[in-house]
Image (cartoon, rainbow, N blue to C red; front, side, top):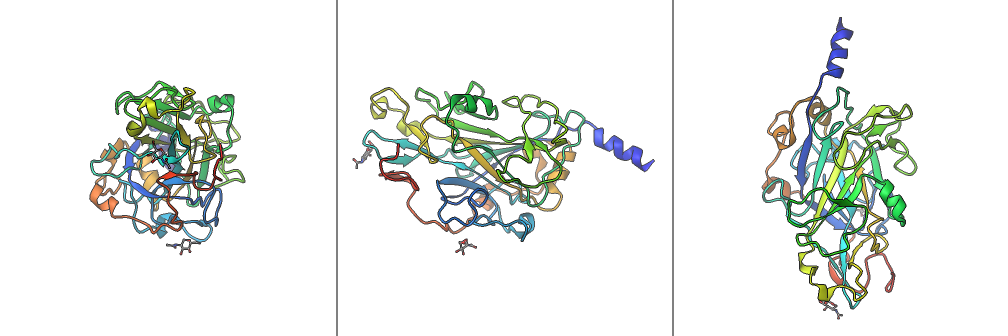
Length: 341
Ligand SMILES: *[C@@H]1O[C@H](CO)[C@@H](O)[C@H](O)[C@H]1NC(C)=O
Ligand SMILES: *[C@@H]1O[C@H](CO)[C@@H](O)[C@H](O)[C@H]1NC(C)=O
């Protein structure tokens, strides 16, 4: 009898989905996932989330969800860290300026940051499957700073750009940087894989423990393969880069190319886009949300997740471990030699 109810619970249709803003926690050269202990790491990142973030985050020694004391995210039990490379504008004279971030639109008053999604099989349904939350210590990356072919970028269906005609433009995604000026900026999109091998909370390349059956955008994902049978939340980031100060064509390269590059390898194609995730939700809070029927910010205020105001989350900060200048006009990108192309 007990088993019967359990089975029913596992297949009950659920329409939960989280979408929330996190303010910028830090912009610096650290990467506790790919380059633990390196101060500084290879390239500049924007990091959002919990204040445990630092050069080393050894989850065999601590549970991040318990160790965190504040977070820049709307859900105050979420001490996870989320990060991507940052966007720079390359001027005709060869110097670089970091592109500012839009104030996050999800919660008035947030500063920069990203919008984070934890959806189910698709945007708002679990397809009658149990969605298993990530475990303490779980981490993964998507994409790679060394991707340098269009074919590889196209194959990463979760990594895309939208050229913002207005701040509300969605869809019309491309695997490379927009070639023309985008009147309202550039949105960088990262969807992570959502099928887990059920055993490993990490792997040597931070990717093999996961498998991607996403089809781009927020379409229904395909079924998980037997090698990676456990469906986890569909994690996605949206980062809104405010390029408006750089849209004047007289500032652009004379050869007609576009002037934006990633902090990683000064990549001008956009193919090197990548993102990192370290799980840090407190207790079973993420599982509770995935098992509920709440949508987006209505999951806050204790229904079932705790949440906080923009003023509270903006108070969360960390002291930068790497204190170099990252803003500009810089003769070279931090971590890259002068003249690097
Ligand atoms: C962060 O890591 C650096 C280098 O390991 C260390 O010097 C610093 O004290 C750490 N900061 C915090 C707040 O723990
Ligand atoms: C390089 O170009 C930028 C943008 O036009 C300008 O603001 C900056 O002062 C220039 N720097 C140098 C060293 O010429």
